[in-house]
Each structure stands twice: as C-alpha cells, then as structure tokens.
Length: 263
Image 1 (cartoon, rainbow, N blue to C red):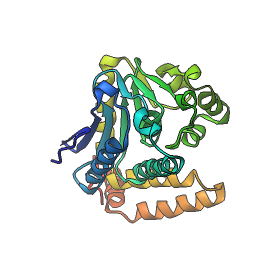
Image 2 (cartoon, rainbow, N blue to C red; image 1 turned 45 degrees about the vertical axis):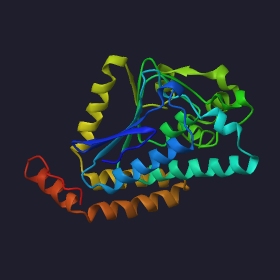
Image 3 (cartoon, helix red, strand yellow; image 1 turned 180 degrees about the horizontal axis):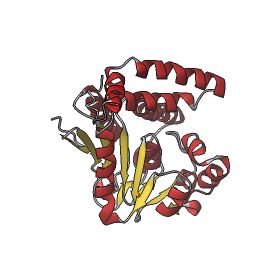
C-alpha cells in the first residue's frame, strides 16, 4: 500500500478508495493533491484485482470545495494555462481508465471539485450536497473541464447559467439529479449503502465489457453520429472477441449465472 500526504488510499475486496484528505481546507485541490490522486488512479488501473474506484472527501463537509486559492493566485498567466492543461490531462486519463470510477459526494462539490467529479463515471450524492462553478466570482473561469463537461451533461442553457452566475447559481443535490448531473441523491445516512449497491452491481459484471462501454460512450460523444456508430460497431466486435462474451452467452443458454474473468 502506498502512503500519500494529501489523500487516503485503500484497496480492499476489489475496490480502491481515494479520499481527499484536507478537511480544514474543505478538501481544496492543489498541485500536490492532484499529483497524489493521479498516482492513486494509475495504481488502481494497473491492479487487475481492482474492479471499482471510489473517489470521495474526508471531513463530512465537502467532497471538494474547489481549487486552493492561494496557489491559484500565485500563478502567472502562462502557469495558469499550463496548470489548467495539466488538470485536463488528469481528468482525461480518468475517463480513459477501464476501471469505473464512482464519485461519492457529501457536502460541497464546487469548482474544481465538480470538474473532477464530472470526469467520474458515476456521481452519487447525499442530500446535504451543494453544487456549482463559482470561479467567476474570483474573476476567472473553470479550467479543468467545467465549461465543457458541464455543457455536455446538462446542456448549453443551464451550463451558461451555472458558469456565468457562479455563486449566485449554486444548487442542491435534488436539482443536480433533475439536471442529470448526478445519478442519484440519497439521505446522508444512506450514502454508503447506495455506493455499495453500485459497487456490488459493477463487480458482478464483466470488467472487460464495462471498460469497453466506458470507452465507447466517452469517445463516441466527441464524434458525429456516423463516426460514433462506426466506433460502436468496432467496440462491439472487440467485446465479442472476449472470453467473457463466450462465458456470458453460454451462461444465458445454460440458464446459469456467468462467471466473468474480465478477459
């Protein structure tokens, strides 16, 4: 097990849990935090025993309240651009991982925190959560995908409202669910159980096929429909070449539960 300074990292029963661990700063993101997150994600992806990654925050008040303002303020324009591109690279790597990632959200999920959550495959939130992109109130814009992923998830109209009004357009978990920004909202004391429910379902499926679906959706959404459909067909062929496809179809015909190997 690797020890990190800014996150807690645990692996057990096929699940890697990455916990942002700066509770006094409401788990604000800085270069050191994201360096640790990236390293943990890479470790989880390389570990064939890991079937699901859970990303969350410690302290009970925030998943992540955004970027670390003192570090952000210290950057020159060129440094700010390069940092934005570095954060975007990490979130793209998260989307490219075969392993599914669940954002387990409780409390503030703002700015960079929301941007990182949007790079996850599932977002499950407690009813005590608050969402938004308040960067404009600092005289800056989102730099880790907030203007782009949010638009793809909730549409142009709401994305402009959330990004342009900033702190004046924060919204609760019920609204986030209505906007399809999150998968579901549950009472805070049911959050662990709901995340475990998703984990159990994912672990019962073919890890290989889950990864192919993730790739097809994340890459296909960036293409025009004809290219995306062709790409889907290629992914379908890849899935049909796996041992899990043979096992899944055989199990169906034999009326038994499949024993997927992720190959």
